[in-house]
Image (cartoon, rainbow, N blue to C red):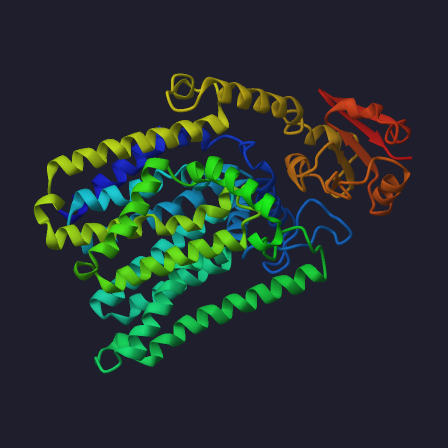
Length: 522
């Protein structure tokens, strides 16, 4: 019976993946949606693979003044993918597969927890699919950023913590700490569940220590402290590494709400409500979760006090993250990924209350039909928004009733514009080598305001417009480009060739490849 339930779960999970367009997307290049950050992740991975770098000395294609040495999150995924690339070749599909497997493992752990805790196959399958209906989780699971895998690891940690709590088996407790450690090293925002469990566990030990069992001993706090110390040590190392190499490439600090004036805060909040919350979770589902969050306090006497406390602290953690990274959350939707850990918690606590107090409602076929209908609508919405990021001409996108036609047309123009610039760069590497330009010959790739987009696509070391982005083309900027070792200029959009500050440096053209011109700096 248990194996059959698991089979049903994976069949439905794979069916949702097909609905999201994963089989087609799996073999595509990165989408242009947040291509900047995707290229950074891929750049670190490719440099690990080609340059045989030490785990602790990652680098990117954008060289700056320190040969590109910089560090972001704990690079365990990047390093692992790089080793696989050495064996099987540079296939971005391998990277996608690793991230998918980690996230799916987390969803499976959520399924296992719900089945064991709630004792109902329907709700056990419903919960992970409900979480997976998040548009940002749908997009970033089959992607290259570390946020979704960190969430998956945190879900695994939560499940094994529950197993240790319910079975009094210490090995599950220590295993949960390993998963939380990996999650926190990769993304510190993924520690919401871990820190909430730590606080509640500490409360239980201090105020209920007379209940003699393995869970209530002070020694149980040591693994938490070990996780925290190791994570702090890692972030201390990243600060040292970046300060001695390329600092300021990746955000290492905060962008809090109090860092902007009242008018800007109001404007950012308007954008967040309009654009980011629907990207975080379907509005119907989001407000339902908030309603259930309020409702579980009304049924305080009939819910698990432990889970209620954990849910409350996770909610407060989400609010804290919102305040601490307020300025970034309106631009970088992936910053909200690890706040998705909150979504299933009020649902679980509420369902547990129904199970105990209103079993006839809990088992009601009518309720299950209603929530199934809502879930199907949410999955359809996530599928449309996910497919649209890769192919606006997709049949499901073209015939959808969720996204308006104008928005699709605007994204189509955006994607076509990027294709016209970047498609040639994906094929230009052999041509560059035929011109005698090696991988390590530094180029100035323009126009490109990101760090690594065009440089990663070409697999070419160098610089781009991210260097002194506010500085116009001219002698000062081009002298700096030369000083940092650039010998060539690669132009992927030739309208800038007429820029009066740049034109004097484009007198020695050595090649043309489709829409790309290559010049040698004299």
